[in-house]
Image (cartoon, rainbow, N blue to C red; front, side, top):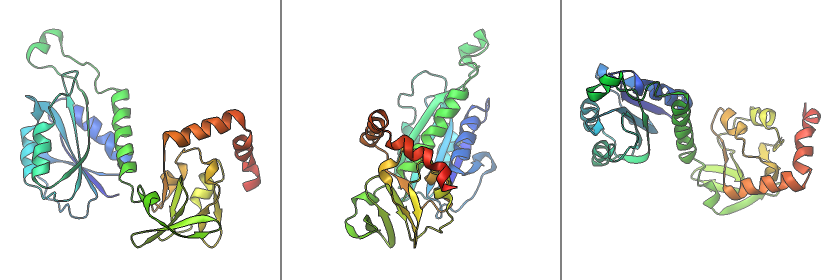
Length: 268
């Protein structure tokens, strides 16, 4: 998923810390609007805009920058750092601009940031040491969930079954052929058969046949190592509470998962 993040961090570097965390999680391009960038956004799948909250809204320079962008049909997220403990309606102005430009808002994130202006000078600043490690972790978690939500196979399970391969349902997802039942889905059209999913999966879900197949999805523990290591984003794990409950029950009342995990030595 090709992603670009625009930010303005002009005071204490609070917003930059959050933007860098998001950039690393998404392997995104990170661009400061202070350089007056002129970038064609047509090839990007996800766009982020963020700044500090100044006078109950995003930085006015960021608002003006967004007003000049063509965002029709683009997935957009917004983020901010703020002094107050609650977000309130501080994102309202920027979200209105994005929607007016045709953008689709898919998420928003905010956390507290260090402030030493106005009355806070008397106590040498407010929100000292913020954003902290927890804030940065939460920012990374936010964009990782966003990436998962927008994965091209996120809705593959809703497509009708067109056939079976080794007993596993086959579905058409646009021009792609996707194989998988209820939990593990693999796009055979984009899979390059590199075998990374086979090597990293601790539960030995995948098998190499004419193509790579998710043969034992009932043993999937939703660790997502396969998807995170897939170079072509061809794997999607459909996470759910019910699937998590199934895993917990199997682990508690059966030794099948443990035996499958211990079988690692037999796969190397």
